[in-house]
Every structure is written in C-alpha cells, then in structure tokens.
Length: 115
Length: 112
Image 1 (cartoon, rainbow over the protein chains, first blue to last red):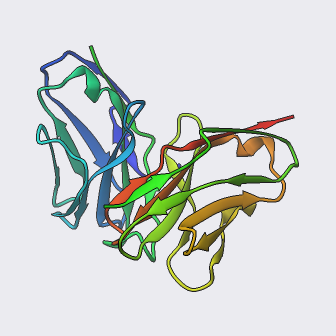
Image 2 (image 1 turned 180 degrees about the horizontal axis):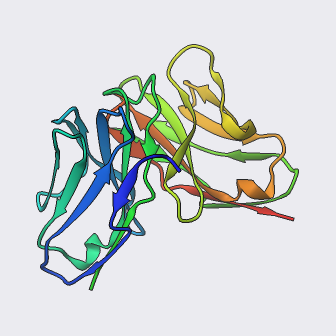
C-alpha cells in the first residue's frame, strides 16, 4: 500500500458526460501528479500541483482540468468524454515539488471506461 | 522536446538468467532519467533514477542501470531474475523533475 488513495476504482460512463476523479495523497505530501495510461497513448503525464498551485502541465486536453484543495487532496475533472478517454488514470504524491531528491508514490488508479 | 524509446516491447527470459531492458532518449537539454516498474493491477513504483554523478545507478530489487551520455541510453539490468520480476517496465525522462516523458514500456516475462 503506497498510502495514496484514489476513488473510485472503476467508473463507467457515457460519451459526452463529465466525471470527477479523486486523489488523496500520502500524509505530509504536498505534490500531486496526474497521469493517464491508455493502450493508444501509453503513459502520459497530465498535470502537477504543489501545495495548491499548478506547477507543470503535460499532455492534458482542454476538456480536462484539475485542482488541489487546501487539505491537499486533488480532483481531476474530465468533461465531454469521448471513447478515446477510456484509460487508467493514476495520481502520485511526493513531499517535494520536484521528483528529484524524493520519490513519488503512486495510487492504484481509476479505470475509466467511456461507452 | 524529449522522447523515450524502449526498443523491446516484450522480453521473455528464464528464471535466474540475466536481463537487459533497453532505453534510449533524445533531449536538447540535460535530463534526469528514471526506471519504473508496474506490477499487474498496480500503480508505478520507482526502481531507480539517475540525477548526476556516477553513471552506474543501483536500485531496488537488485536492478541497476547505466547512463551513457554519448549513446543517450539508460539501459536497465539485473544479473539474475526471479518469477516475481514479471511486470511492465517504463523508462522516463524529465528535465525539471516535474514534467515527465515516458517510454512505451517493456513487458518482462520471467519463465520457470
């Protein structure tokens, strides 16, 4: 158990809908990273928040957004869902802003299926 | 822009044999290099990382990797694999420790 909690574990929704994925970081970790893993695109970094502020953006679509709340949990919002958004969405947390001197710990992911 | 190539999508190897998983990268700036392992139905776990200094990096579970700047490679090795090493392995690069680019992954299958 990495200490990172993601809910829900599975989500099935229809095209055009909006969903929210939740991530609770390890106690004491200030950074939250979001990643998407799909068969087509592989593993992609989406976005990074540190202590409530967005710090880095990767290949995140405009239909997707995220935020980190004062209690440090984070939510990834996916809207106008398409079939191609079906993927495993991971979050990871770390103590520092940079994954250089510290390690990021990954949750078990939320599997999103868009039908 | 950075990119990562993992030339082998699947590597079958017998138990107790050595293994090398290849990773090549391209970047116009200095990067940090990482290897992650993903066991079935699990998130990623960091195996090791190269930041600077010695080009030979030792990680967890007996894995090591060698950074070769001239060949822009960061190959992962283990002298003797176990059944429990069966997993997907991802190489990744980052120039700032925040934004990561991952390779497509190599599926290691250890056969009895």
